[in-house]
Length: 228
Image 1 (cartoon, rainbow, N blue to C red):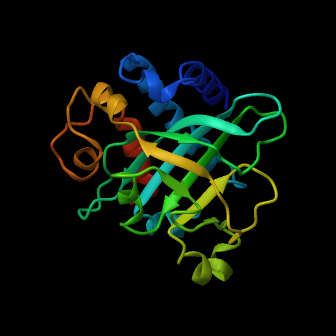
Image 2: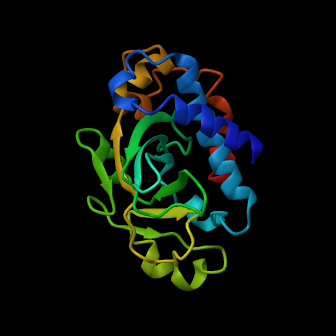
């Protein structure tokens, strides 16, 4: 928890103007974003109240881990970042690609200035929405609150038809409730720097042309472990 708070603070301080400056963002700052996303999903899985059921993870075709922050005391979530990973036909998970995130309407935890969200993508088409457009979670693809372990059996049939299952620490969300988790969009400049490559999102996700640098391997290994 302490590590997550520290990483989140560092990443937020460096992310207040994400899109405008990512061409010149130091690679170390981008690595912190990946590490923060790894800490987020580990924290989700370590807490029985937020852990994503194994059956949900086994059916995942993609995972988005988002960290969004509040711009002011009376405003909603206005900016943030995240990573997207997809499961390849081989069963292996892709490199994590950096994405921008904004305008979440899930609600903030009491006293918190960040909203951490994990989105499970249940089909192969949804991740590809990011190739050409900004993707509005809950508008461009239906998104519902994902079931807990206790709910998964009775809710599975109606919930798993949704392309996006959203897991958040916000209170009051029940399994199957329709949610809007904000906009996400590709961030090629950040990925050029992170991977020292000119390959864009589609190549990074679906090809094997880029070797995973050491900094992203822990996240890849953990996702492969929980969602084999």
